[in-house]
Length: 492
Image: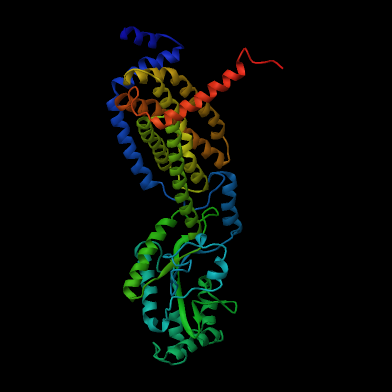
């Protein structure tokens, strides 16, 4: 009878098979609905967690932890011997006059998407937007001042850190050194005097050479002009491009790498740029700094990693469908697979990980590494007969030991990685451990409970098209086996 069959399932086999086919299976079947409810909450919570907190990294990947002697040596070299590749504070450039097709305009495409002709097309020849600074002589200075004031209000700089707007010095040079009225009312005179200000001798008060020599040495940077660094771009007798330089309160380096506060600084600078545009009436401004390069890279890595993870999950779903020949079971397995990857991403966020090169690789392969346990148990469930509870019990008895053994052996292999100094290996070991533990719990508990509650019964969800394909393959295999092992086959 039915009772005798259940007793046979419980008592036959290895003690681990007895456990998984007995008490463990009874627990899953009895509390299936409650377990499914808990995993639904976990799925929602983990999705919210990694969506909000798993962000792109703001500094380059380090191969050792910050307390490792190799990383500490960088700080010692910097503090004791002043050995560093870049000096000073982080500087933000606020500019107006670029087309959206120029890579430094954040409204256009990033340089990595522009192809091999990037240098020739966009760096050597700036793409100006038709902007003429003659029309904004006062407004540009107002925009630079407002940008700086907004950074102060947001705590990203101080009054002492200061900023450099070349147009302010040009105004003083024109008014105080040469007694000219400002703003200029003649377009050609304005352009000619800008060139004259740039070429004026250092001894001439408020000239570019005079001011950069004794006060603004740390602010130089921008468009090359006879080996000088100006604050503007002059094309066809018109100032088509202009920028100001703004110091922040943050040191350029932290142990040789950009500061971890970069993303907060970026968003505050974007808000400051909007305020500067509102005050001045100008539009299409740009704010940029050299440290944004690593941020652009990690943002690209993050996007690519999520795309790769989505593709691997889709491929895993196709594999499950082919091996189980059951659309109903495949749908339930899809939820389990997403739950595994979502848990792993949430764990990465909880442990303070940010998406860098290694994390991007981890995210990309998470879907593929999550499918094993789910597929094993789903295929075993699909091969059993009986009601939902009986199929779950038989599947757990048949595959529970194998899945558990696979989890334990893989986890033990990760222990060696946990003990390495090389951060890459250690974090990769942690990632593998997170994946296999999340996959084990989700498949053995969450998926089995879901199958006990809503799994397909005998014959439910099967796909006739794939069934005929399986039958054709099996028939060919049987015919081939019959020819090979026929006792009447002629012996040469």
